[in-house]
Image 1 (cartoon, rainbow, N blue to C red):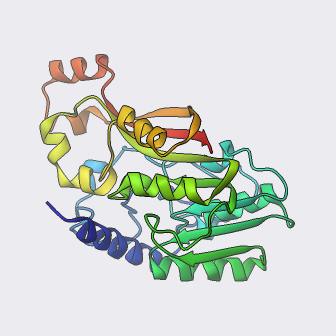
Image 2 (cartoon, one colour):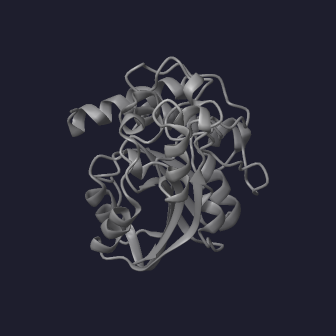
Length: 281
């Protein structure tokens, strides 16, 4: 099993490759939490064969949200956290795992010119790409920093709102990540975070298959455990703002289950889910 450091390097390399790919022009990837069909990614992160992933929709479209910038949308998310984040004019917003800047630019449309938005990402090429996007747009109140979510280079009690889109599931130490999120939020501040979680045990073969597990569900944990981590970090008023099943086509499940087992799997409510979680400090 890979160590925490090795996992981080795998993710960093993958997203470095994605950051250097051609702009997605708003195209939504089939595999939001790691695979981008337009990017060249290492086989240790996403299988070179994406046939298994066809029809598995992780990401949601941002195109109708104010502030949306197509060149900053790499189709890597699994939700729309900024839509639920209750950002007010003048707020200071921090986006964890900011990528090419998509959520930051949407947040800026909410917080306005008197607010401030900080994007944090640990992939240097992604930070550079986001800065280029901000410069091209002429934004002076959006900045992008290089840093690790487990040890954020940000002061205590800084943010009114924290957002993140399908990133925490890729972080090896979620306890530290949410403790850091708590630290940088102002008292009374809140977060809205979209992520991938599991409910029930996945079929053994499906869980093990690198084409799906390492590419899209790497690091995802059970929803009840995810919410427990948030609670243990000290957050209050924890609630689900949205829950959406990631539909696995029968053609995918047939690689692991009989038709009868597939029906039982569906009826038991097991599977992979995109959730948007809200909590307050």
